[in-house]
Length: 511
Image (tube, rainbow, N blue to C red; front, side, top):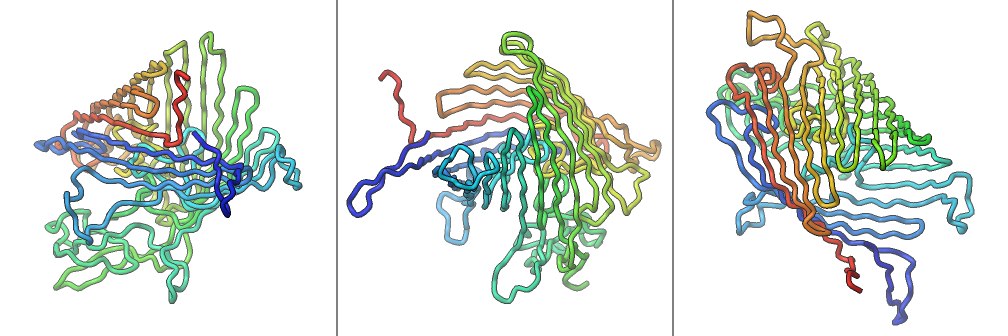
């Protein structure tokens, strides 16, 4: 809901041909986690907690300027004491802060420059949302969501859409800073060293934990593995810069959408700080010039057949490739293919689908990678609600095959859905846990996701979800590196209350 503003200047009211909007959001999600993201070890108990997002979004719209500011606070119930001191900090952050300026608009006769139906640029902190959000999305399911600091140039002409985008990340603009080295993560202020002592994180350092483990294993000073890194789906590293091109066109009921996305990762060297007597901190030192550039490109086609009165068919196919270098400088050759069909009759819709994401096999050289990473999308929507794959919990080295079937019933106030997934590895993975088998079984088990959404009123929705994972030793090996040490039946349930008031809304019912 928007309102037309009237302001007073020097005591005289002035009509402003602009629109203001102000929306809020309070979203709580209470969860019972008994195997979400990875299998729980035997003998462990389920976890329960409530998280909360509080967001306030202000918008301003004029003929040629669109401004948006979204501020949010993310926290767990009880994460802060009921009375905190000044050193405890907070989790208040700017989620989005952008402005879009129109340069050409065929419908605006006051703009003299013509040639393109609509041309604008959008600059600032913003979400990148394209197609079915499998590669670029706002990740709204996550309480903190996802956004990018970027410039986006947008053009529309005779049904064609063309977007050009770019972003460049840096840590500091302080005097005395030279070069553009970028430590690709949110390093914690303190880290445990190889002797088990808590020490300050070295400057310009992304810590690694020896064997990814506790102090006992750390004392062995084994091979370091990455920890405490920003997650970009499966890659676990924030990019230094990106450049993108998106082109789409709809012909009748069929839409073609092409994407080219290049993200650049800072080069690094392995380093350690400390000594044998007091302990070492292992990590990556991002002081090497240059970047490793990854290219992702492909095409998605979808369409609709039929009318609302009869059987409606929605179909979608897509193919994407990745090349260049991965974040570690390995030669990258990877692929992702997707296909789905949804049939809709009245309030019911149902249909199958299949996704393939390539991975490394037992014969992949150490200098190469065939693991497809689904960029900066919303994996929660596609590869199971329990978030086992392509989220912050990691992705399988051997890639993934996902054969699924979805059923949904929807009215104006109620929506019920049930998704069934069968996950399989795309490539063979060596079995180091069982000497009697060369490779692990490709079958990663089954997941069933049930959700119910109910609109309580115009601004309030309730969502109830339950998911069940029927896993096996292959799932355990992929997620934990063990076999027969974790429970293979995983459960997850949640209740989410989403309240989104529009503060300028006027109830005209009954008038």
